[in-house]
Length: 362
Image (cartoon, rainbow, N blue to C red; front, side):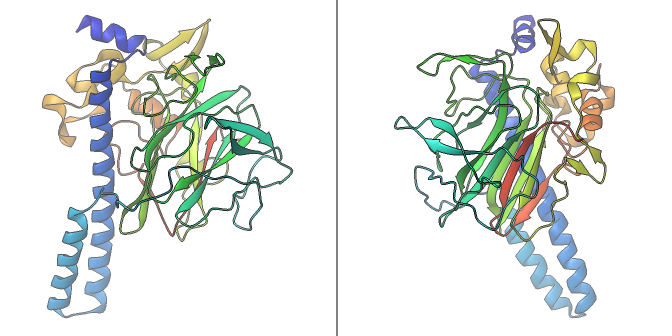
């Protein structure tokens, strides 16, 4: 147990530990999906009951909802191209608040994404049928290296990029996509793309299917997950290395987070600035990340596993340090621990595009 705790504190998780955390991530995704599906179903039942007094009609709606709920969290096996195509041609459907200096993604012969300047003020891409646009924006004062752990069923051409301060980059993503995205800091790579990072590194510029080291602030996407609906969130369950928010646009849903990272419950702050000393990751005299209680203490209680796996038993206020409270104060819309579904699951319908921003609210 001591050895495992030490590995957590140095953020060098073994493959088995990553698998355990992936299981918690899937549990959170399925729980969040079911939470939203049941909420939508309940709303449909109430509306139908109010407008139609026929009990047979209500029973029919309930049966239909049960069928959908049993399929929640599944992703359609629709095929998609194996390589994302990019272009800097502007289109009318654009994010509302991108920096004036934008970067459009292009692909080198090796499949590695490179950054080329675009004269377009939007940096938008024309998405062919079966594809959408995802834009990454760096509002920080440091260079970051965004990455994804690839969806093997719906791959794209690159899984790692670099963004200078104030830059943005747009890529194409498939309609069906189940991935995690994060950004690395303090990276150095050789000509072959191998290297290391101060936080969240995977050992390479292109992470492929490899997750970054924890702690990592994560953006999680499951597109077309249920009845044409996308599920997405920001997660601090595995700790925080950078402030982040996600916007949706172009679909039929109203985004609950504005372009500056604010929601009805608050705005985006840097959790590293309020991180308790016990949870801090310090490099070169600076706090570069804030660990979760699970990463630090690695117990069933703080990881909500074993005897504490039930939602009723997973109580962050009972932990030695309530990391969930720290994270929720910094990013009120984000997952602060594994069962934080009610305030953290975001949805969008209508072939939505997305913008991921690293930074704090003005």
